[in-house]
Length: 176
Length: 120
Image 1 (cartoon, chains in turn green, blue):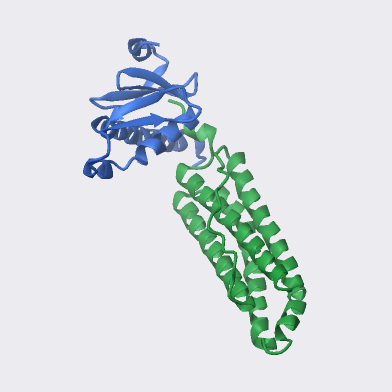
Image 2: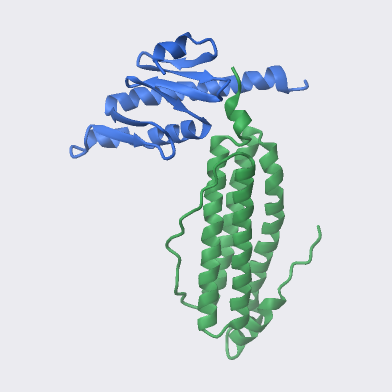
């Protein structure tokens, strides 16, 4: 008897399902960043708005990477529904706190997929995930650095204006 | 295609059988034939996975407890030729048949790997 399922797809149904969940998570992140960009723009933080527009594009790229991988491996990639995206934030600082929380959640989620891959000995998907681990190092670094600006500069007086001015300068240069 | 024709045909391999139904694999067509609820239906790879998901997603316990819930379920799978209208008992039997089938397919995958695909 032929092994039809394996012939048709490299991914197990479980891995396909978690990858589709990740596609949804990345789409959610892209939308949340867009909402953050909107809030920053409305409140006069132009540099931060640009930063979040870029972040949103990056999350969309991540989503498409997962999407195409699932398709390339013979699976069914599901275009996700994104709901409950926050529109209003209480403060400029809250946006960056939420951004870091979001990046941490994405990292943890990818780690959970990797754990699953080890369990199933799906080394092909594990290798694919490596790119994301490196990317998450950068994403978390940038989100953490942005939040640290609130401590180093302070929000009093022209503090928030100064923080916004420094946001575009955050750069992760490690080649390690 | 009649059930007997499929069963007697040497190119069909029985994957899993219960008292209430059976699933056969056709290597040449790369698909499965499900003999259940009085009909024989052809399912390709994607449809079989969708069917499994649709059956597994039915909350049998909730349906049993809910007096308002009808004792029937229509299982319609997008882009598949067949639809099932099943009672809760049939759903339980179908679930058992599909679970057994996927265990056998997984076992076949392991055997295939060990026999033909591994260098050592």
